[in-house]
Image 1 (spheres, each protein chain N blue to C red):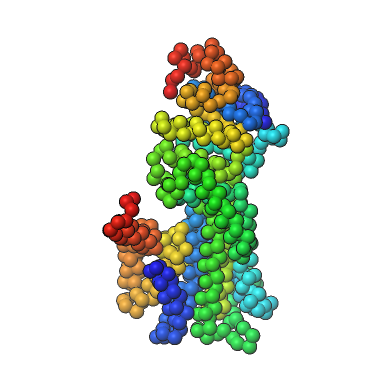
Image 2 (image 1 turned 180 degrees about the vertical axis):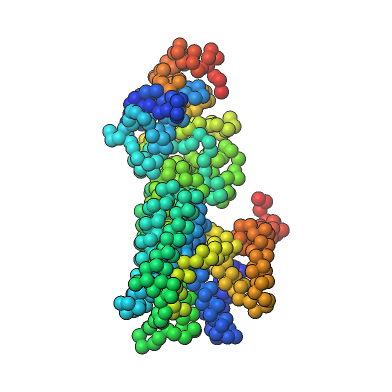
Length: 253
Length: 324
């Protein structure tokens, strides 16, 4: 279980998070929504170690989640980024293989010695990379340079890299941004299948149709505070949420 | 495969070089090219793969040269013990500098490496009792292999060739492993690399250690070849030469720095034979500008890109080829 407790983050005089608390129960798909500047990405950054909170704490599996982003990834908490983030000069396949870092064991000495188990491990990792590419539907793009792909496909590369790190909690920051309708449909299917594989998903997304369709729990942030949390239906009917974010039509994106 | 034929031909040419090279002087140039190839490979590990520029790489070269020379002269250690000790000493220095500077990276790493080379150079000049100061350490013994002394140029050439091949193998294995992928990931996109569990500082320090150790090996080979070590080994010019070799040859490729080392060791020597010294530096500069202007990514990436285009074109020309 992810427990975020009284998280405070401020940038200079601007308060981004003013005591945010929520829980994410595994396995589930939970969404974090709210207007721009509500603190969604800041919360992601604080949870995954890219930002230090001035107060409050985050625990995962009952132990504090702290340290550098790489330490947090080692705990099975992996995130994607709001602004598309791939290894731009590498091929799609190399992107995923790089994401498999934590699944490899080979150390310096065995690599330098050219040990047989290192070669076996490389073969195994390459096979895993192929499986992940097939999962996100990029197997036919494997040799293309990631930075040269269309935007929607770069988002899939990013998802594949995150999955390669074998997350148990996956934080997706606006994964559908820039995707076409058909791509979004595929993404929804993927998120469901990720959840079915016992991975807990925490989602930041502006597309309300996607959020309400896929989430089990929705948490609403406004001005750095949680203003509501619950099942999608109750959130859609929540007066504070309608006032702060959804508006009367309830489908801004 | 043209590529494979080229590799076999180059390997054959290098192995048989002492037989067909016209003079010992040419063999000397090739030995120095070998030493510089190890240095360029070592710098490339940092500059080409992690993207961090060490402008104090001559320091690791010098530390290797002095360590090896001092162990051989003062403690009468065999070359075969002095060489790995030089690698260890330089590697330790690389570790210290890496721990110190790679938390900050980028410009700070450049500054710290420059300062480090300056400090080490001053130590070598002023610690008279140990280093003999500006007078240097003459009489570094040549390596011995059983009953044979490797004092001839031919013998030393094969020693340097073997060492360069080993350095190449070390870089090759590292680069094509999960460690090499971690290094490239840090160069390409550090926040993303961290998000999949790659500990930036740890892998950058590792690259600094291996890089410095290889430079130390080159220093040891240099010391036992010229048989004289002086504070000149710390000259900034050495670092600049290494950077030119890596960038002109193609940083982030394995063959590039080797080609760069061969070219930019041979070029000044060729120019020396062809023209007066005033013109040599000018011609060197012109060659460099032309290279950077026309092949900004370096010689090897330019050739491989051209070969890839040619291969793609010939596939497209073939009748019945699948459309891409």
